[in-house]
Length: 114
Length: 108
Image (cartoon, rainbow over all chains, first blue to last red; front, side, top):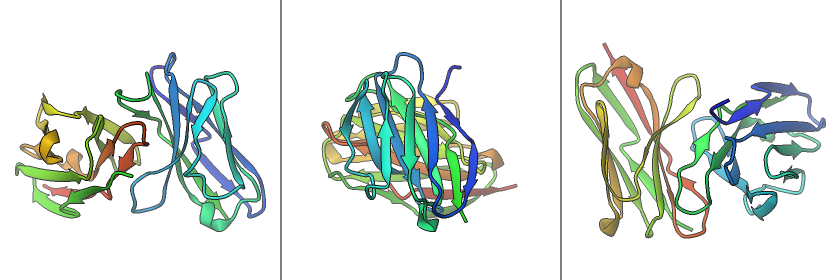
């Protein structure tokens, strides 16, 4: 497709379960970003990759959160032992290069932890 | 890291009115983007504008990098313009930081 694709669109899980969120960036884009957006707030940075290398993971809230992009294309954000406070919209973005190019966002995955 | 502030936080307009949204940032930027989050939660790129002026239909944006602010102009507003408008800025190799947004409601 032409844009950033995220799946699933919605995910409801029980507290304590692990979840994996997938992002398929725009073909050829070098950089891939993960953001989290709580209701009524702006997106907050989690982590980003250039190719397969994770460049910055300073926004990951704790060690239950991890991300990978093993072949420099599709990325997975994994949350282990989910908690209710993890409920949010998780957004993925990609850009052609890192520094001076726009980010293009997908439609997000709405995660609800019950 | 860079600080991004938006004003006003809320804006209510009647259809046909014009409006100006402001974004202030605390550092020199190499990326400045405006987004529209529609009522369905989609985050839509409006402008990539680290400096200068751009126009797209009824929308235009200006960034004055030396004075560290950007403005988004909406003319002849329509109900479909409703939603939240975010400004996001990036300095150097840092990450793209979002402001808290301006919530716009346009009534017929």
